[in-house]
Length: 386
Image (tube, rainbow, N blue to C red; front, side):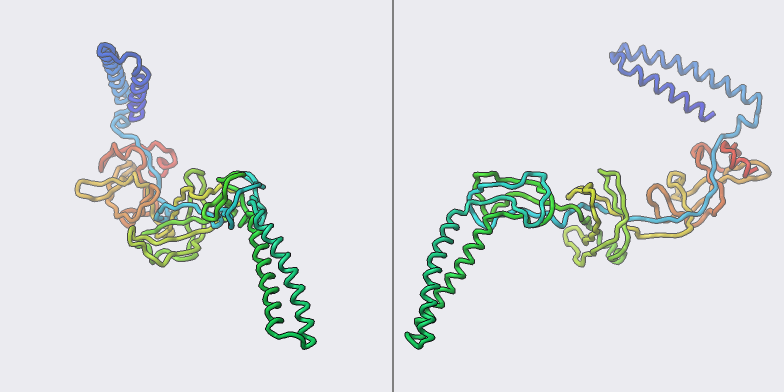
């Protein structure tokens, strides 16, 4: 009967919804209201007729309410603390030139995969090359002077000071030349890491400057998930603990171990940091994407667990459920007060009041009261309680 009522009201709602946009004027609404009242009167009359027929055929069936029940079984129960985190890449590096100058060539494009040390761009270094040529000329002369001075000194001709000056001059120019060649090498901007060229902000002809990055290279083959956890759980979270990390945008969840537990409490929000690491070969985890980290802070094996929506609360604050009892061959509803514990993901831990095997009313529990005789609709349970 309850199902019939529900069907009727759903039908009325559907009809109403279909005609909602037909006429929004006052007259249109009045007309529609009149039609619905007529339909409601007809349905009420049909309901009354059906109830009368059922009562005449089976007086006891008409009085019984229909319910469904399930036996309470034990299961493992875990409670998790959920905190928000984000994905980061250990290798997310800016490309910066080491010398200033005009960019004369670019070797890669955005999206290219590069290896560490691979040329990215070239900076005009003509002045450095000219300086190197000049130093090499001076060094050639200094080397000749040194060699001659060394020959004279070996023959005990000339002074030691002249020999040392020639040697010092040659060595100083050699160092200057090496420095100039190092500067020349810096004219080639190279990839600092393996990865993908994520961004290039400067083009050929623009002035490069060490203070201004010219692009970014990102390697997300290995990523880390960082999260802030309340200091309340400082003693419950340890390095090596397993946590569940889900990525709402991807519909993906994985089990990871905590790699790092911070030793500093942030005074602003009273949290400490934790970090997890994972490989990301397919690249689906992007830096700065949202992650939800679930930290298990409670677990009980073989616990009594109920769907949270079945638990009701009385005016005096007592929590209770309706249990089905077999009394003299009749299925009677019994209101049982229970003591509950933690709740998570729509399930609540039951500490006391009921036991494994009790038949918990799962459907129709809002329509019964203590002591009602009911009829069980699910066959398996119905056979059990007979």
